Image: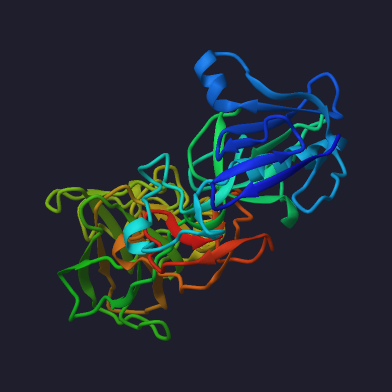
Length: 420
């Protein structure tokens, strides 16, 4: 007996030529390999199964060798046969005269926010699978073949091969549930939103003294000598930075160098934090120094009027003499990041009448990037499996696994509209 599997696109159905009951509507059937014999095929009527509460078989324990594809070709294995049946019987989008209907589709109207939805409409064609693992709406999924030959769709656990890629999942499901996967058409996929770097350089001098500035995504903060010179003597400046509502300030210390001795901080830069912009508190950081006085611009003497490395002179708010001394106070290697936990940070700098040094170079930013500078992705850009998170896609080609092409440049909400 030979049963030819043919899809009728115009009729939105599948036929099994050579069998006694050949015609079934689209998205009605699921093929499986028989649990007791991996050379036999069962075909379940999903609709009648749902109605009766138990599996209703249209074909039961049929040798896979009895089936042929639409062109009359035999199948190399039972799993190939099941994959073909599920693909042909579960096209997600009805077609007109053999064409997928993508009329009036646009990224503006059809892209969804994957941070807030767990399902999305089908815009194209695809395959219905049993999920072999937990799957998130919008993630790329891959073929998985069990030892018994059962084929499922899974989230990749290791870097897969290109030929294992199926498409993009249309629903968040748990392992064992049914999942529709778009294999051809347009769909919203998971991708980390990236941000353009807004930036400025702020020099602490007579002009910026006693001002308040909003942070950018990358604010370079330097002393009056800028990046190539020393600060001057007799400076007494302060400046406040506002990370803005809902954000806290992050400080990356790139370099520091001040005139300090073993017992005095002749030139000193200190830092305070506040969440209301009114009441400021000295920071307490392990590798920063503590002064003998707690009020800005603080005393030049270390806490207890002892040396820089004495008990009580650390866990403070004044930057050490240089990176060498900072490392001895357990800063780690530079650049060093301080997550302040405060919306507002205020710096005070005081230099004496004698020697100067190269000062500081820091990069200030919010704890998370401002979302007003979302980086777009050009339409047509090739998109790949994210090599650091297999549930997402990226423009980075490190994985070399192509998943589709950008169809709409808006890449907000960790979501991107793509062509598969």
